[in-house]
Amino acid sequence: MTSSTIDRILDAAEVEFATHGFVETSLRTITTKAKVNLAAVNYHFGSKKGLIQAVTDRFLDPLTQNLKIQLSDYESSLPNGRSEEQELQHLLSILARSCQQVVQQNHHSLAILARLINTAYSQSQGHLRKHLTQQYGASFMHFMKLLRQHMPAMTNEQFFWRFHYLLGVLVFSISSSDALLAICEREYKTIRNLDQMMADIIPVMASAAQAPIIGEI
Image (tube, rainbow, N blue to C red):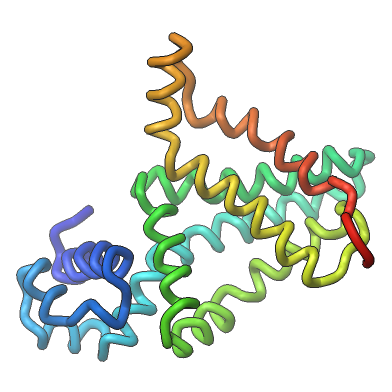
């Protein structure tokens, strides 16, 4: 990362917000960590709310941009004769690649983003939830619509849970990949990389996406 004022503020803010929460983290703490004054935060971001939104945009802007490009390529190749499971694997691979491309810039980005999103919905941050919906909702809704076409019939609530279970597997695996790969090497004497992990995970996720629905629809 560059040493610019904006980057220093965002670097400090993302760690403090993810560790301590939006409410508990003061701008004074962030400015001290970033070695800037309060005027710099107000100049570049306008307010604490603006800084919170900028921190999440830092991760979600490149993620959704990658997703849009790959989904456009995917849709331009239809119809293609793939089975439902193959379609699911293809779509889930698109999501995985989009996440991987973001992680290449900051290996801990997905773990930090997951904590930030969790904090956004567990604390009084209505402005951030509104911002996320307005800025990124359409991109993710489009992806989920395509994914759902190849999954069993289910209610919106059932799809909500299943999609987030799948997303949880992906985010945990990528954000914890260093530890998982180290364990594999130590315990099983096998050296693997993230690409190999993703090749294993995608079929598992696709099978989980197609699992029968339990209960009434």
